[in-house]
Image (cartoon, rainbow, N blue to C red; front, side, top):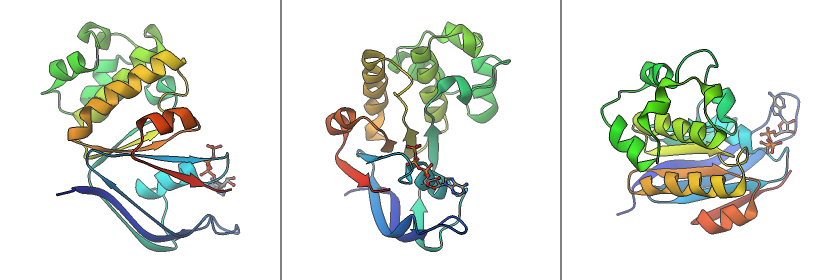
Length: 192
Ligand SMILES: Nc1ncnc2c1ncn2[C@@H]1O[C@H](COP(=O)(O)OP(=O)(O)OP(=O)(O)O)[C@@H](O)[C@H]1O
């Protein structure tokens, strides 16, 4: 049976004094699925994540979500610059599966003792995925997780993330249609 990790039903939302950005919008994500959200700048992709994360309140409709973790576009701004990676990860997540996950993510555990600027963008984005997975989510919201990386590194990071689809569903924001076609079960194109 499909295990649903996100259900959005008849969502409507507008920022104050602005036109409706979402009007009766519905979407669902199951474990094992990658659902991509595409759309030009200003079409409301980041706003959707803010609504799902509970940082914004819908005007009407319902959003039902399982435990979620987020991965952001720029790994350098996802970590505090002055603390080591391991300090920042241990602040928010239990470390039981750390070594096994490092292995799956092709990450040398020694890099976790470093500070963010000492790592490459690809290494640091794998650290963001590590942090997200240690929180044991069933839903991952990934906002342009590969766009700060070169194509080959980005594809590798996406492949590593997709290994965990037996445990999670992924909602992916991307501008990259080729990436979306390659990795998605479903694609939703928002209009500005
Ligand atoms: N806090 C806010 N208050 C008012 N309007 C906002 C706010 N945040 C975003 N908007 C507007 O809402 C619309 C959708 O913005 P959003 O950031 O969700 O788009 P996006 O598709 O993620 O864009 P991009 O691809 O450039 O990141 C835009 O017109 C934007 O100007």
